[in-house]
Length: 314
Image 1 (tube, rainbow, N blue to C red):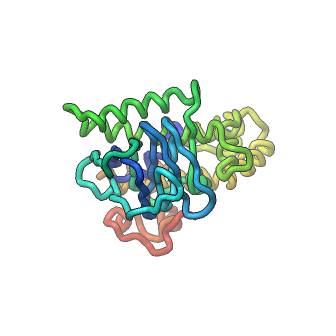
Image 2 (cartoon, rainbow, N blue to C red):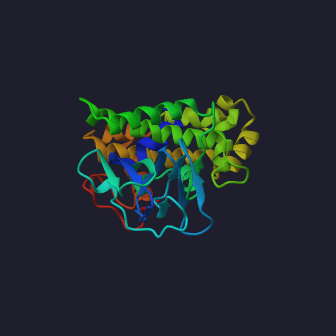
Image 3 (tube, rainbow, N blue to C red):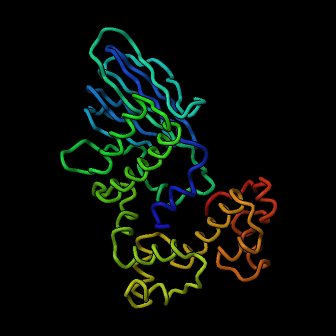
């Protein structure tokens, strides 16, 4: 898999949820913080205001996307002066993959589409940790056409469910998450959090090395072989990689291998030798020692859910 796909695959857990809400003015709604999640809001019809916990309200219009990568709370309203009600229903608490609701009667209409994703903080990629609390992607003619197409498909499926929607909607939500992240990292504002990782992904040399590591983590990579893949000298590659990624090449490689191994342990019944090989180890003993250094517990205990209190990402 490529790096961005891997980032989403290792952190996502459970099924995403979505809700389509028709609001009749006046209305205001508070959405509480949901730790261990990410969410989005899209304006399908009309307009509204995003009311962040701090800072000025932000005007939203049709097609605007707002993404909350760290599950922070916020408010939406027809006007910044409208008192918020709430907290709102959390779509992640719904039993169904998508729901529809109507709030108020008679006033001007705004329709929004929201979605939520459960995240496993133990395997969060450092790329995501650098993202700001709120990402606003305004609708602009000709920009991010694949994102707009996914939004149209998702809005239609949630607004008019048909046979197969229970499968289509979660798939579209995963696609939408990737498109949102792609749009941000392709054009992050200057000096925005995450700009370093955007530069890493855009850099031909570092991007080539990251792609190689993610597509084949079990390969016996060295700084030299990664530098060869990047087309740079060993010293120049090491400096550029560390400057953009925030850690040396082999440190990142080891971290990613352990992340891959942890995912296999929690999501498959693969034997330890298979997990070790996928993580680039020919010895189960060496792999088990490396895994315990990373997560604080042996692979078998990790598989049984016995996590160390100090096993967060480092």
